[in-house]
Image (spheres, rainbow, N blue to C red):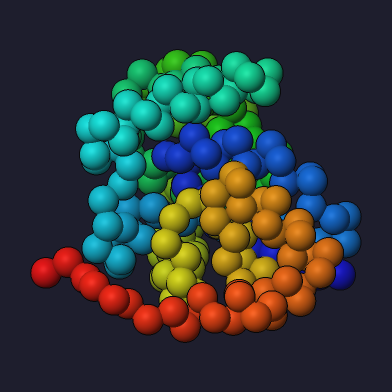
Length: 207
């Protein structure tokens, strides 16, 4: 059995799309779902999120709505975005980070237009997943989320969703196609050009 870690945050609509495609990976790949705090990655790398850049924010929402309609995927953006994903990340962890639980949470956030900041939404999802609401604030739940975020950053993860396979990163929805190709033939990363660009020098940088 081969293994892959799938890092995600419910704040990302692209992670929702990618979740629906995980079954495209070979059946002998054990996919471990790893909720993390995207904001923690942004702080680690000194980046802004897509929703923090006005023009990119609008593009992201339009692109997601168009993609969903084109592919026939249920999609309705939440009442406000970005939102605080912490309760949902902790809920997923308390529910065992199972595919079914993660799908249920993504579906509630990205197909209903509901308000993620409404505590009633969190409570309803917790009840649906048979998770005591108190489980979201235990030290163990918080530590797992912290560990997932820190281990992802240490592995070089810079965005969500990201698949980590044998130490190699495959970022984004389109990264799934790259991951499938790598799983079919790991030597694709050993080609002359892949090796050359791995050590490509920087010719200029911003001050």
